[in-house]
Every structure is written in C-alpha cells, then in structure tokens.
Amino acid sequence: MAAPNGLDHARLGMIVPKRIVATAVERNRIKRILREGFRLRQAGLVGLDVVARVRARVEVDTLDQSFATALDQVRTRVASRVAASPERAETAATSSIP
Image (cartoon, rainbow, N blue to C red; front, side, top):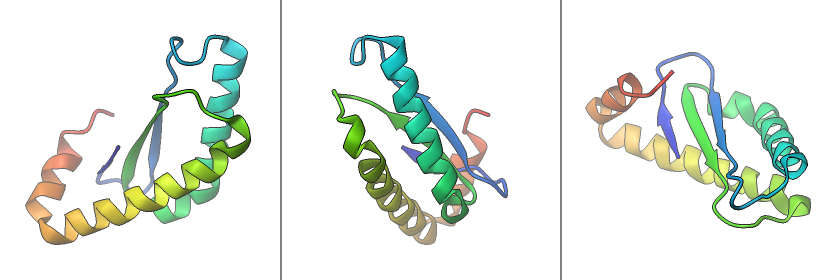
C-alpha cells in the first residue's frame, strides 16, 4: 500500500504478524531487510507513505528482490493515480496517519 504524504521524504510502515512469522528473531530479521531495502530505494519514493504487510510465509533470501519489485510497482501505480486525479492525491495525502 502507498499514498502520497505531502512531505519531501518517504515513510515506511511495516506489519509482520506473529501468526505468519512465529519467532521474534525472524520477524525482526524481516523488518531489518525491509528497512534496508527501503533505505536504498528511498530517493525514488519521495513524498510517499509506504506500508509493507507480510501476508504469507516469505523466503528471507528472496525478500529484498520481492520488496524492490513491489516498490517499483507501487511507485508506478501511485504516479499514474496522481497524474489522473490531482484532487484525489491531495485527499490521500491529508488523510494519511502520521
């Protein structure tokens, strides 16, 4: 999920449920990988709030590449949505939770 945030930097939110990833060590490892992937690609995501949600068991070895692909798709989708409807983008930006 992503939405414009009206700021000059991107923000990341993560949801890694206990039900999917049982141990805290594994959950924290996944969060570290997501955080690092976001940090490396943050320059291309200026002005977006991104929420990464783990919905199924993930392979940690391929997580970074999967996350990079998902970020590219999200960036493209949000850019086309903003170009299509500037009012909608402004509403999304003001209704995001800080």
